[in-house]
Length: 194
Length: 402
View 1 (cartoon, rainbow over the protein chains, first blue to last red):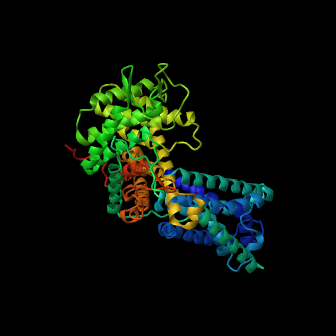
View 2 (view 1 turned 90 degrees about the horizontal axis):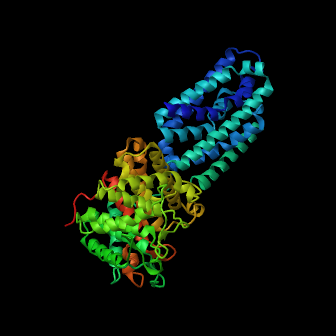
View 3 (view 1 turned 120 degrees about the horizontal axis):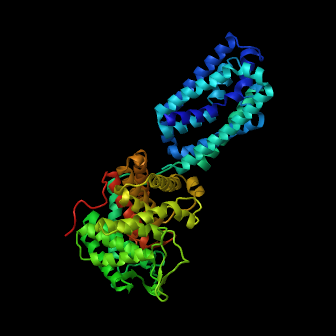
């Protein structure tokens, strides 16, 4: 159970929902007013799509690592590097997606689900945790992390209203710092493991 | 605009992933897979050690294949180590030639003993006034291996005598002085050694196994406490724990005595250290850029010690539930590194191209030279790795030689 929670925290960090709130609000409502049916549908579709992508990543971990000829322990160090651009972007701007990136015909898929939620960082984390704890634990962790992330996104409008845009930006930056911590932990664990 | 941005973003990701692939996670490769062929490498290594003994019982210490020369250097610590491996070959491979060779080498050690204050210590060359702890520890281990391989007790008194040198050097904190200065009749309190404490630890544990109830276990426990709590600090190890296979052997010997949680944690960290070294070695094997980035190959004596260490920790994991979760992973690494060793060994066909094929066949070379402990550590590592892969939990051979 500890392993599932540890993996869920790591995956949640790489989903970086706080950095997605501005983009999610822009897509769902074109603004920051209260929730409505459109935003619920957008969130649901985005989360289901991301869940599907991340679960496929869990299931493909072994063949993927076999294809690369890389052990799970060594991959963890690689995953840590893959997380770096997202962490840097969050630390710099507090956002994982720019508002100019959300003007597609199916924004719940592109860019909210992919790469917003299921991006290189979260995919790397999912493969790393799947290699470390096994598929079942990693799949459970993905589900927990996505539920938590969707709850934050659902409450995004209210959060922005209560805390203000600047506070959300600060929290987004903090989530970048959290990704750095998770990346370091993954890399160190990879180095210290058999 | 959006398409351009997406393409740019995609391009940057491709560059990053390529960088990660090349610099962080190059492919891993594990050499020979067949356990049968890996076992043949161990036999060939034992053959090298058996074949290359001098008339006085010492071994060929160093050999340069290109110039076909044997320098005159020697080291009694490594002499004792090679003898230990030959007794392991006698026990594990029922190799009577190895037994005879090791007995000659043991006679050499007996001729180079220094006796003082009721103990005996192995020393040669210019070190007879300060016998190094490590040589005596490995001599005890050699005799213990002989006892396990043959059930012959003729060296029991000598084991006690040399064992007393180890306890004479043990400090209150469980660590060891590196030598006794005979001319002033006091221990050398200045010198330190990274590996002597582990060697002495294992020797003391084997003395207890051979002679239970005589108090050797208390010395071994103190030594294990020192090694697992203080040694890495005393020796200023940059990335602890020190990759010390002797400590791993000691842990494996003492696992039935019940290790503390702290010692189990140390064993886990040590397995991680060896595992990292193996993974790095396999990345060197996997691609040209892996080889470029991970530096040159370690010599076989080094790779062999990692294998010995992991194989010993496999025994700990196989017998202590607290490490059961890493047992399979250790097996994976052992198979890999034993395969790499077997792949790098010079076979008869390659040896035929050199001036003295008998000094090349079954050996491992590093920058054109082989040293006797290359064969020693590679042999012991491969032998115990194969034991682990065969789920043979006890280090003792199944049958003894008469």
